[in-house]
Length: 83
Image (cartoon, rainbow, N blue to C red; front, side):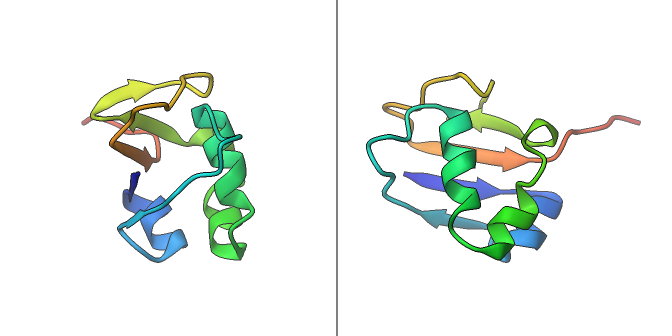
């Protein structure tokens, strides 16, 4: 599965994207964020406030309880503001 990071999430993790094979126990967006936080200090720092992270599965906004089975791409980004 491809993970794509935007804005300060990308800056803190240190890469714009990565391909990753997830453990079977990772079934939802919330599970994904919890799993990523265990992958190192940079992930833990970027994702320390899960409610501040927005996600999209295959370009469609998703919530923490959204299942990720069959997803090709998951994007993680901070809240967006308009102006």
